[in-house]
Image (cartoon, rainbow, N blue to C red; front, side, top):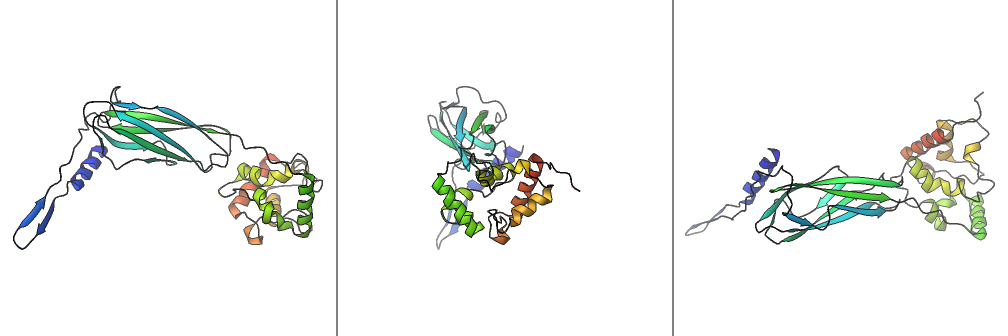
Length: 279
C-alpha cells in the first residue's frame, strides 16, 4: 500500500496540468503519463523480463578504500514496457544511482544501476562483506547480491638504516617531528575515521611492532609497570618529554581526537593487560 501511494502521488504530481491566461484565451496543457500496473510488484520477478549481465558481483577493496562500487546492467527483453518502481539497498551504507522512479523501460531498452557501499569502519578486518539490493518492478522483485572482499593491509614499508637513523635524530630534536614533513606520509596516513585496532595498526604499529623496532621504543606487551586504561590514555595524549614518544592529542599538536585516543586506550588495555600488580 505504501508503494502504491507513493507512486500514485508521484504520477499525480507529474501529470502537469497547467493553466495560463492570455488576453484572448485560456491555455490548458495536459502531459500524457504512463501509469504502470503494480498488481504484481511484490511477486518474484519471473524469468524473461529483465536480462541482467549478472545478479551477483564481487569487488576487492583495500584497507584504505573509502567506497566499493558496482554497476549492474540489464535489458528489457519483453515486447512491452517494464517500469522499475524502487531500488532498495539492505542497509544505509549502500546507495543506488539511477533515474527518477518510476523508470519506464520500453521493449528492448537497456539500463544500468550504480551501487556504492561506504566502507567507513568496515575495511579494517580482512574478509568478505555481503550486501543485498532489492529491485522492484511492475512485473515483480529481484535481489542483487554484492560481495566486497576486504583485503589484508599491505605490509609496512621497510625503512633503510639511513632513514631509521634520520628519523630517530629528528625525533630527539622534536618528538612531534613524526607528524611533519616526510615522516607524516607514514605516521598520518589516512587515520581519519579510524578507531581502536584499525587506528593502532595504521598509526602505532609502524614503530611499536616494526620488525626492527628501535631499542628505545618499548615492547607494549612486556611493560614493567602497572597499566590500565587511564595509563594508556595519558601516554597517548601527552607522550613523554625527552623521549621519542610524541603527544598524539590535537590539543598538544598531535593528530588524534579525544574519541580516537579513548578507543586506542581501550584497545591496548584489552590486548595488553597489566603484567605488574598495582601496589
